[in-house]
Amino acid sequence: MDMSRTIKIVLALVVIAVLWKVAFGGSSEVEVDYEPTE
Image 1 (tube, rainbow, N blue to C red):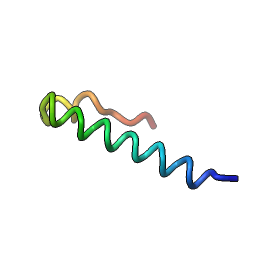
Image 2 (image 1 turned 120 degrees about the vertical axis):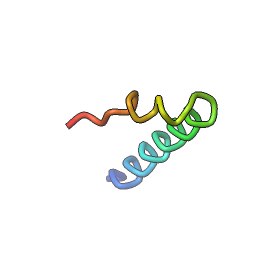
Image 3 (image 1 turned 180 degrees about the vertical axis):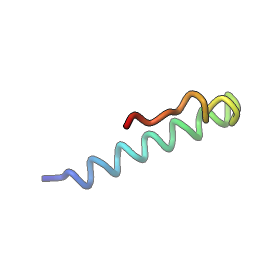
């Protein structure tokens, strides 16, 4: 069971995607676009 490792990888990819978007898009758009589902 590598659940913890999988979660870490997913979180890392999300963080990279957000940082990438901020770098090339704009921080103002990220907050509206990135909305975690509850």
